[in-house]
Image (cartoon, rainbow, N blue to C red; front, top):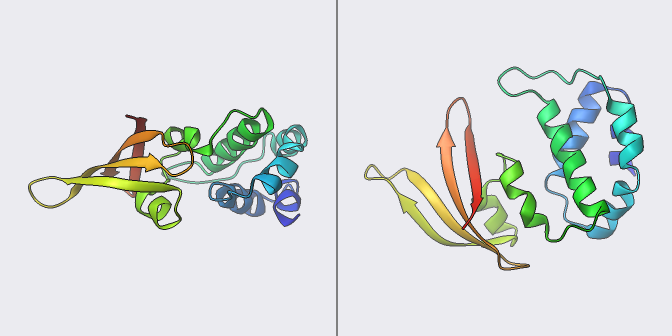
Length: 143
C-alpha cells in the first residue's frame, strides 16, 4: 500500500503527494483499508511542515484525514466532502462520472459563474461557483 507508506514516511514531499492523490481515490475497499490506519497517519504526520506558499500543503493532508475519517465512520456518500475541498473541479468530476453537470451559468463576458451538479451516486445536488485568484478554485454548496 504505497499511499500508506508515503503518509507514514515522515518525508514532507511524499506526504503531500499521497495526501493530494487521496482526494480523487474512490475505491471504497482501498479507502476503508487506509481509514483503519487514520490514527497512525495522524501521529506520523503531526508537526511535519509540508510547505506551500499561497495555500499551505497541509490543506491536502487535512482533507485526506477528513476523507479517511468520513469513510471510517461510514458517514455516507463521498460527495458530502465536496464543500470541504476547493480543488474539486466539477468538469473533472463530471468526466469521471462522479457528478453530472446539469447546467453551466456564465457571466455576460462568457466566464463560468457557476455549475449546477448532481451526484451520480446519491443524487445530491450542488451549486458550484468557479473562482479565480492565483489559481482557479471551486466553492461547492448543497443546492
